[in-house]
Image (tube, rainbow, N blue to C red; front, top):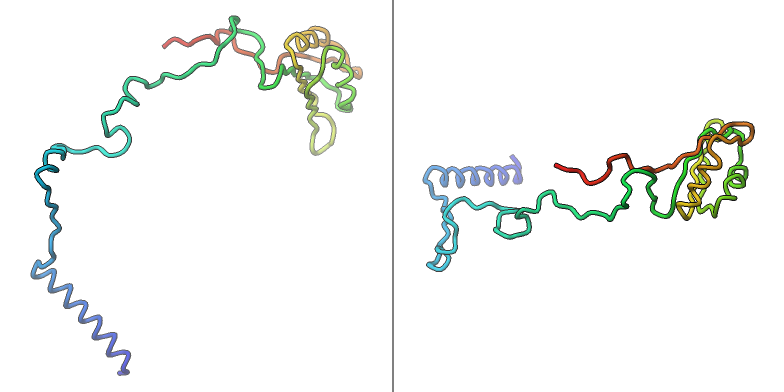
Length: 174
């Protein structure tokens, strides 16, 4: 055999003998912790819980399920305000309507902050609905009242609030 082969054999057999000697003789030193007199009193006698809630602090005591609430209006049902304004949804929009057509029809009721007229990707035509955002609730309410069941490009529109609080949306009782 070559010089390298005998070396590898010697190393592996030496390792095997060393491990066998430790296992047979029980010469593996056990690691023991020496607690001083001060530390023995501080160490808990029972099983110690690790992680969140393992210590006695008042962060979690009796506060489960208690959340801050947003201020709500007196009326529980009705329209809900979006982040920036009051949004209405217009359905029944003609498929060949342009954004300008919808904008001109609804601009007379107030300043339109945002108008979304979604298009079908395949055909390129309007999907049949639009979202219109007004600054104030009164402007949006006027647009709903005036334009609901009216015609735009010979097609009847249906206009409603986009976001509404459900009836009985007050505080829930457990």
